[in-house]
Length: 96
Image (cartoon, rainbow, N blue to C red; front, side, top):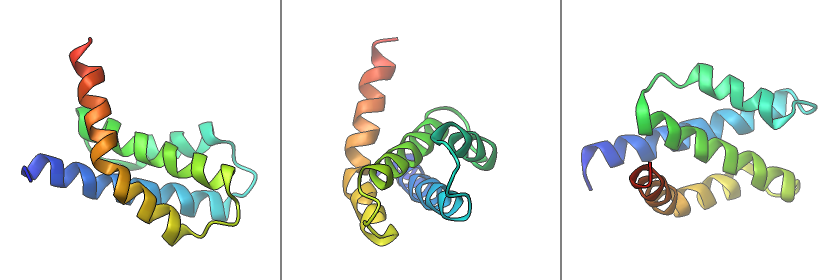
């Protein structure tokens, strides 16, 4: 796996975890507030940052859809889908 992909996946997991932590400590926070926190927190550029934001958004969406799911389950789902997230971003990048 290329180093940049490895870095993206690692940062995606960090961002997803941060988003879930933020939601836990701020249960009334809307997703836009959580995403702003992630944007400010993630110290990366370009598609690496975008992939991290996408993973965080997906983690929050999963938590909202299934409030009983624990963070470990959500993090595993994000990890399992990380390649798909990156591929989607690559396709999107090609079209612009």
